[in-house]
Image (cartoon, rainbow, N blue to C red; front, side, top):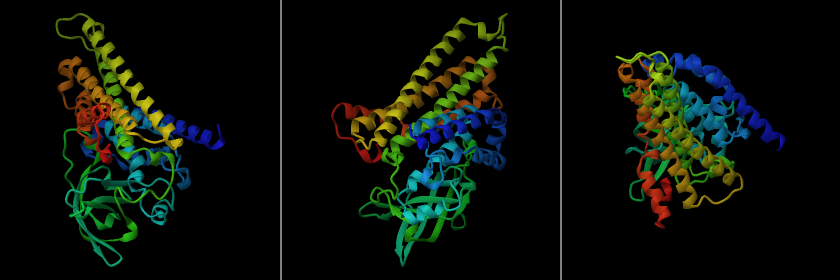
Length: 387
């Protein structure tokens, strides 16, 4: 083990320990976060100080440069405390990957003052247009689901550059170039502040744009060799696992005190409850083992500069979808096992239920992913652009 690898591993472990220390305070504020529909600044400051937003940023730009599985453990632990916090950290630590194909001078300038940069953006173009102009582009559009946009130092949105060829160009905006509209009133992940943002005929210099799926990354680090849909899918699934483990924490804590109607012993002593918990616990552990095994395999392949074949991508994508779907099933069971107690909006299991089902609506872990993975196994040619 080289000194750099050792120092990276130690730094990642320190971040994980820091979030474990913060977890009780985060969980205690989950209701506040949901009601405010954003993560409060003082908590963001603590997460930043802990190194959460630099965990995956390359060492060349002042970050930790941790491996994928180490970062996923951070996202999972935070999601166990509160799903919205886990989601914001997951994206805040990873969004630089979306814009790594910016010209190198531009990318470097973003990190000139340090690695704790929060970017918020949207890859779906949603009808936005980039019209060529002298020295750059005139950009207009609306982008939805921009998590954390209210505290982002930079925002980016994908656009249609040429409708005839369907070529797409991502543009990077400063906050003063866009308008954030308060649209995030939702059932789950309410604390992520995933509002819309709008640009109206904004000039963006060419050096703050790049063509999606055409321009190569301007830096070479192993993480960027992992196909982005597969990488982000695994990160999302790690957050789902954290929500599910938190739900089991909640229902076991409730069951030790709750005595159901007409019973004489706490719910925790009920054989059916014990069977349910034993079953979903092993389901969750199995899903977690598979997901992290795929993450470690992907990282090893990236370090070795090995090919990400359709078969390898299929394993990664299917593991993510299965893990997230399993996590949702675990939360459903915990919610049901709690009985009438869990129907109150103030109850943590009510929030876990809404959060995990909001998460599983993400297109990267939709059930169609398993269809695409099955097609690969059957010898069909998948669309690797989003696979």
